[in-house]
Image 1 (cartoon, rainbow, N blue to C red):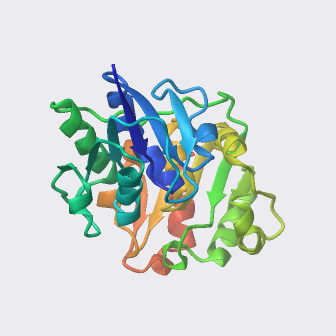
Image 2 (cartoon, helix red, strand yellow):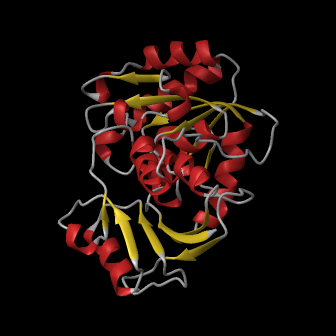
Amino acid sequence: MKEILVRMPNWLGDSVMAVGALRNLSKEFKVYLLGKPWLGELFYGEGFYRGIYPFRHLFSCAPVREIGLLFTNSFSSALNFLICGIKRRVGYPKDMRGALLTDRVPWERQHQVLQYLRLAEYLMGKKLKAEVRLRPPVQEKEIDVVLIPGGSRASKRWPARNYRELGERLRGKRLSVLYVGSEKEKELLQEASGNLPYSTPNILGLKEILARARIVCGNDTGPIHLADAMGTAVLSLFGSATHPELTAPWNQKENIIKKENIREISVEEVFERLLELV
């Protein structure tokens, strides 16, 4: 089997959505990943890769030289592969980087899972099926609802006060509620949770919390995709900043609420939908 180095996305949700392509590639290649240090925690126990190399700067090189596949669309990531002497550089010719690639795959607007899968299909020369699944670290369902009030951009976030009211209403139904986010989102979590508990776990801790939940509700952000991949029920909230046809949770595309302005989604609407799904 040939070795292939895959430059992974920088975001949690995108890395999860790449799993379908990685699983297929591992059937014909020895797959090595180049990306964020937390990828080891995210993919712990999975069998679709042989090793992970951290990407820290433009000159971060891995010993794999024959084939490089770019899941990122940036000019700098293609330049990194060129600098590191990777012979065959495969990716979408975006960000004016076409001249840096040896294999330029035509880009199409479609769900992110399918965009990654198309790159794998190009290399493998056949149509593939995406299986976006990760093994949950635990099976017990001990938390009724996990709420994810964060997101990479403010325009993606349902208001914190709405999450606070939602949590209070859920507790009124005797459901356990936990708010979850990153350490950088601590202030937002405090605002959104009010008197209810919140947590800022690392990736391994996040996986365990999401696996223990009966349902996870939040904005279009990484933990939603992670929960979906582990088989936990999800409800994702969309405004105009992101598009369900491109980034809806792959296995539960129907479990979304979308309005042009995410602030127009009412607490009552989310509350009633959660009670149906929990």
